[in-house]
Length: 235
Image 1 (cartoon, rainbow, N blue to C red):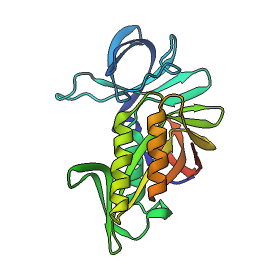
Image 2 (cartoon, rainbow, N blue to C red):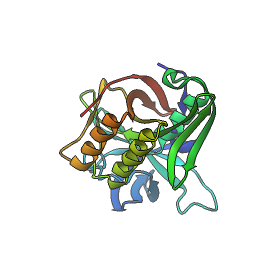
Image 3 (tube, rainbow, N blue to C red):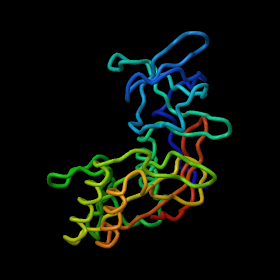
């Protein structure tokens, strides 16, 4: 297990609460010490297996003038299953790991750029070095059932477009990759073709074009998400 770890929701005090409702994609309401509070959700997925009646939530308190709510919903606990509901957490983890030179597949690059633009396209990460530029997209596999992490949990046309852009740049001679990060301990990541056959076909086409497809597991707890070992991506 790597020593690279990033805190939940970017850092803040973690509170335990009970899920009440999800009035829209961006907000949940929760019971926190007898009071009903609203919390931002950074996961646009359906979360049908996760945001269920009685689920425990870890809310990260992040007060600030520019925030609509004081809290961000970071993790949901259903029975023994612990699920991140922050799809941006793996992005922060991968950037931290790259800057710490903790991903052996990407050694030799001197500069790490998050949210990088390359012509009309924007990528999660761009790496620059003597060998040229490499662009990466990071995908969060948060739903983990019996040791298998699943992606996606809802159709993602945006994700398919990301893969097409990676394939286009690869055909142009640039190194490109997509990194799937399991937000918890897993032995493999499975692409959910039943949920999104378009994304599955886009991933297959990208791999055939030479886009690298990599997977990593992680360890999720109240301290945040820690980078784990490489695991296979299956589709």
